[in-house]
Image (cartoon, rainbow, N blue to C red):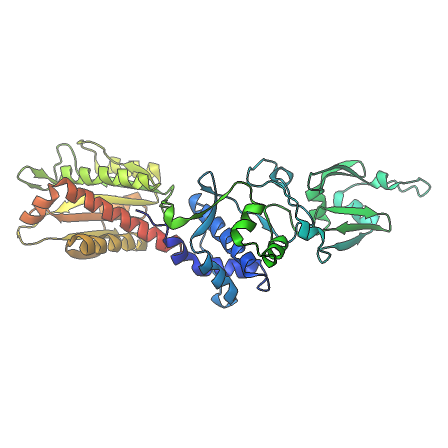
Length: 437
């Protein structure tokens, strides 16, 4: 299943909102398109890592150029070694961006510092902060001698120990206390760690705005004015990256790292319902093993109550479920009627479990739509394994073994495979709608 096209179908407005919030609408459209790709990349990375959280926003806060930028870059993300980058950006680098080691204490190959000529010429990002020595002492919890007869040079109070290749302060001595330049500038509310000073009180001169990693928005805007397109700009600020289109990059994300427990009903001497040589225990196990295989391919962590023809008591099944602490439980069964004409699938969820109800509805809807299995509805009930496991779940009865046509179909491996495909699709659909909107 290739679901890359869901990215902008689900996230168009969220991406546009983040663009509107994080870059000026007065900027060139190519610079805003860079920001759209950055925001999409960071959302995509969070989903890939399982860290995405639903975010509320007001659609009225979205400006028109943001939507235009999102649509012009539909499904594009920035990748490094086939994985979405952590797309850092800042307002104005002041003359050069930074290596990742400066701020993150680790080398990241795509976050390499570069010279940014446009920001060197930008005077609007220059700022001045004046500070009393007593305030400096207080911020960094240092004590200067109170003997007013002592002579102090500026080096007794502030001394730059080391600069980065990007000309930012890496380490500074404050009253004999060594402090990281990024920490120093943050504590003094300086706009940037690219600063100098002279003893007037103490006056700090900063150039640039932000941490200096990744894309420089001011530089991107100036480059766009000089006819650089978004691809050239992004490849300038991020080293050796590739711009991927997600509908060409197959990766199912909604249930990555989700824990799903599949309970194959019956087993061993407990055959469940039978029809000649066909048994409920055999069919439920076949469906379960197919589900496990397919769910693991899309990133889920799958647990089983049984993987072979063995008897496991209900209480032991419940203990296994509780121990694995799953995000969701599916118990697989078949049904039987004294009337051969009765057919179809149904699902049961424990009272009040709306998540179980939703996934049950998805499963029955897709089995009906794609396999023409009659939808007998989702019911609320007190099924023991659902009640005692105390987790979200659904008890699925996937057909009537007593129905001649369904019994024949259930004996075919292609039919079992198709059922498993549609259950997986239904779970993906549920989690997509639940966390990706």
